[in-house]
Structure formats: structure tokens, C-alpha cells
Image 1 (tube, rainbow, N blue to C red):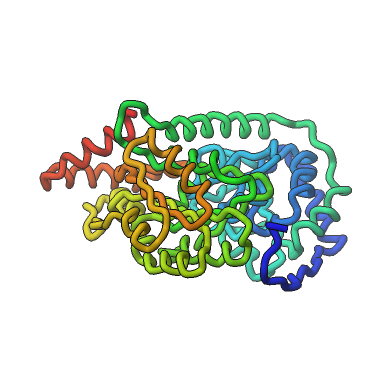
Image 2: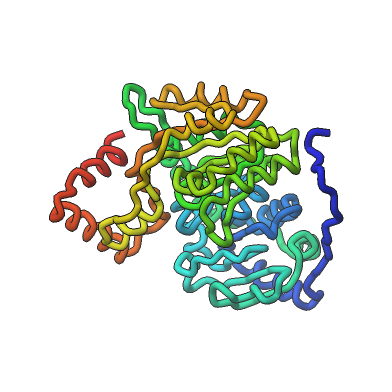
Length: 406
């Protein structure tokens, strides 16, 4: 069986459930509210069916944290995407407009994206997580599957659908806007990273394992990879450590030799661990490495722009990664123009051994959060003014040409 790991161990899965009295309190709060939004995370793994049943009874849109994407997004008519710095407006809207926020198996860290006036309920198997990120009205210790199964018979079927319908429609519009950014731009040489991620998503196997570097590769992973219950996503989501994608891909490929493993590497992260190309060659691990080459620490630059700071020390003087891969004994490919992206990725994915595809992508790509604060807008305006005064007006032109005139 190609999907069986080499290493076998018994995973401990204790069942933990709130008391009957606590479940009655939880059901009472949910039953009397007309506008419930669910925020789910990695703790929802293995409880997809129960989560869908609860959402159906509550007529509740489901927002997912990044680590919950692979467990929640697929086969989900209640999906409204993500919120937070990596998310987009529909997830933000669904949370900010609810009366009750039901957090399940998540430790979503960004406090500014929580609603201020809603009743907040949190269910987590780790009691120390309760109330760690936002003010909490009700906290319950329990694993997702067991707790939701026990809760379901106590929930009344809601008929009030306006909140769900509005949230889902908002998501359709936001999703359409994101998809429009993932285009090849025929006749132009600029390659947008969104298009690379979307093409990779379409070409990858249905049970592919993806790993992504921190920074912009994580953004494109969150927004453009489609989950189906079989695919997996690995990343340094809790710690934000650079150069994680390729080492994680190596571990995944060694454990699951028959599955397709793809590393979505930033040029900064990849350059830090380039020696691992030799590991792929030495052990003949057929990992496919896609390098998003924008010659910069792009996410750091975005943070500087938002803070009104002229970027410095973010330039990367990169080598030819494809030639380095060839010298190491891998298949090394490079997509120079948008029309080359699909054939180069396709050739790498079909290759029997390890392969690397280098894709020069636009440096000035803006990845906007779901809501812009006054301070961010002021900071970005300050950056543009400083850029002009310091003789760097060409950067403003580049920003406009990449993000406005597509």
C-alpha cells in the first residue's frame, strides 16, 4: 500500500467530554442565539462529520484557522474561508457579525481579529488554552469528536438562515477576487506567485503532501491549495521558523515513499538549507521543490511597508537554483514566463526522482489582510512618501504595475 508509513506507532487518542451539566449550558447558549459562527482549528482533525452536523443544526458559517484548513475546508457547504493576517474578508465578516463565536480545537492567536461584543465559547482538550487569546464567556474541556457527538442531540434545528447565507455569499465574492489574482497574464512576462500556487494545486496528486516555507509561501498555501480530505499541509505554523519546507518534505517523503511530496520554498528559506538537495540525491527521495524566487525576504518587506519603514537588508542576491539542482544530480527546471509555469511544473511532478523548479515571481506582490487598520494605512502612506523623497519612486511604480494593472 503506497500510503502506508514506514514508521508505525500507536497514537494516543483519549476521549474527553464536558459533563452533562456543562453540555446543557452549552446547548442552551447556542439554541437561543440566531447568529452563530464557528472557528475551527487543528483540533477538528477526525471530527469532520460531527462538525458538519453541528454547523447544519446551527446554520453557522465555519471559519478555519490555517492549521485546521486540511481538516475543515473540504466537502463543507458552510465554509467561509480564513481570517487573520493570512485570510480574507469573508472569514473576518463572519466572525465580526456573529452573536456567538464557537471556537473548537483552535488557539488562533491574532487578538485583533476576534469580535469585541459577541459571546465567546471555547472547546479544547487542553484546558490551559481556554481564554488564552480573547475574553471568554464559556470554556469547556473536551476533544472535538466526543464533545460534538454528545452535544448534537441537545441542539435544536435552526431555521434562521440569513447569517449563514450572507456569510457564504461574502465568501463567494472574496474567493472570486482571489481567483482573479491567480491568472497567467498572457503577453506579459511577470509571473504572479498566486498563479504558480493555483497551477500547482491543479496539477498535484489528490493525496499530495505539501510543505510551505514561512512568509509569502504560507500565504499562497493558505489561499490557493485545495483540500479534499486526503492532502496534507506541513509548515512552521506555530513557531514561524524559516527554511522549514524542504526538511519537512524530506521527512514526509521518507515516511511515505509512495506519495507525492511538494516543497513550496521561498528563495530565502531555500538558500538557508540548500545543502538538503544533497540529501534528496543521496537518498533518492523524489521530493519536488518549487522555489518562489522574488530575490527578497518579501514578507519582511511587506511588514516594513505597512509600518512606514523603507525596506533595508531584505535584498537577496540569488544564484541560479535550477543549475545548482542539476549540479547536485536533480532535475533542474526554470519557468521564465507565465506560459512556461504549467509545463515546467508538470514535467517536475512527472519526474521519477527529485526535481526543482525555479520560478521568478513578482517581488512587489501585495497580500492584503482581510481588514486594514488605520495605522497600517498610515504606515503604508508614510512608506510611499519616504520612497519618493529618497529617490525610490520606481518602487511605487512597480507596486502599481504589479497589483493594479494586471
